[in-house]
Amino acid sequence: MGSWDSCKDMFIVDVRFHYYLRTWLNCTLDVIGTIVVIVYASPLFMLVVVPLGYLYFTIQRYYIASSRQIRRLAGASHTPVISHFSETLLGVSTVRAFGHQERFINQNKDVINENLVCFYNNVISNRWLAVRLEFLGNLMVFFAALFAVIANGKVDSTTVGLSISYALSITQSLNFWVRKACEIETNGISIERVCEYSNIVKEAPWILSSRPPAGWPNEGVIQFISYKVRYRPDIDYALQDISFQTSREEKIGIIGRTGAGKSTLTNCLFRIIERAGGKIIIDGIDISTIGLHDLRGNLNIIPQDPVLFSGTIQSNLDPLGKYSDFELWNALELCDLKNFVQSLPKKLQHEISESGENLSMGQRQLVCLARALLRKTKVLVLDEATASVDMETDNLVQSTIQKEFRNCTVLTIAHRLHSIMDSDRVLVLDSGKIAEFDTPQNLLQQRGVFYEMTSQAGIHQNEVNL
Ligand code: ATP
Ligand code: MG
Image 1 (cartoon, helix red, strand yellow):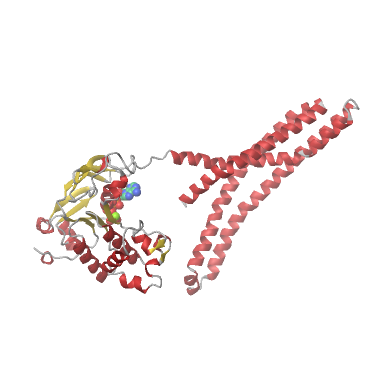
Image 2 (cartoon, helix red, strand yellow):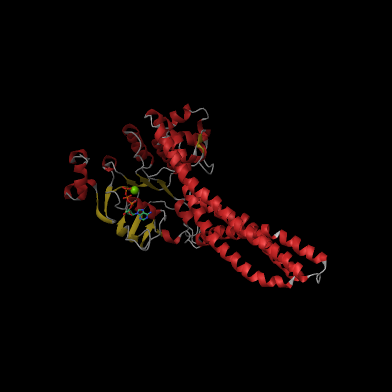
């Protein structure tokens, strides 16, 4: 919705606005020209221009203010009509199954009625304006003719004819003049919005002069030093004073209650949000000193929310076309997707609809995993990577990850504690701070937060390989 609005704003600024401005200027010059011609023919007309002008601007001010609000209301009441209609179409089988057609028809009538109330007022306000403007226009014709008669032959008949024929066309020009002024005012909001967008703080540059060496990171040692971050300057820190260091190719499990800051920690690694203090160092390079492209291109993530784009399975796995079909099939096999893709009529060329809607949530996560397997960088982040797949596939995926990423540093965020029990170390987050960081065995012996969480999840100490 947001991006559609901004597209519309840009469209108005680039394509439409100059047209509104031009037609408004045309009308203005039309009206001024007509008045000049009439005043030239009968100078007495000057006397009525001032009161008529005052009347005109009062009517215009009144109309523009009301019309703007009525249009806003009409726009706001139009959205429920469309969304109710499309929601009903999407859930039509459920509506029929429960026999609630009547209720939905009535709801539809209600929202349409509400919209019509505004629409009707819009039409009426236009009529209101037309009646007054025509009255004003006719007054001008009347006075132009009256003063010509009063002049009693002092002005030649051709000039009188010209001034009256000009006066006759003024009604239409006045009408247009108000409408165009109204259009400019309503669409001026788009310019205001575009100006606001252009002041939004942008992301850091993609590539900086200091670039990491080829093959970075080659060890996968991640170090957080007194790291702090917050989403906006006016809210509290989402992460505070985070300091820890992984060793080479270590497998770290990250746990914590909902809202503890687990996803935030991964967002910081990719610099989706920028630090408020402290540093993150990966293999000796402070990540804030390199460009975002160099950073993000060298790390790998399977996000909480699996992101797919409309396109083929192939273009989703390998957007840059760097890998052979053999490698793609191999990655799919490792993620248990090979049989599924082979059963599709177009196989790798199968079209994925917008944001992957024609795949199940679990399948989307598996496609993301296959993508990560292909890119294979030294650091991998899994954010609830298998939250939506069944237990059997989860086990398969876990063993694939263990096997294929054994030479990588893997940060796993998991809600199912089972999947991180065999990590080398576990980082427990609590309200944005590190509560515990040690091997699962030591943490269990310490009987702290981790112990509590594992006993709640029904995992006993003897399940852990001591
Ligand atoms: P979950 O287990 O539910 O995924 P999480 O540990 O990943 O939780 P985060 O998403 O990292 O939690 O959120 C940490 C804190 O940051 C929360 O208090 C949350 O309210 C806040 N937060 C997260 N995203 C935003 C955002 N976009 N704007 C402002 N605050 C946010
Ligand atoms: Mg999260």
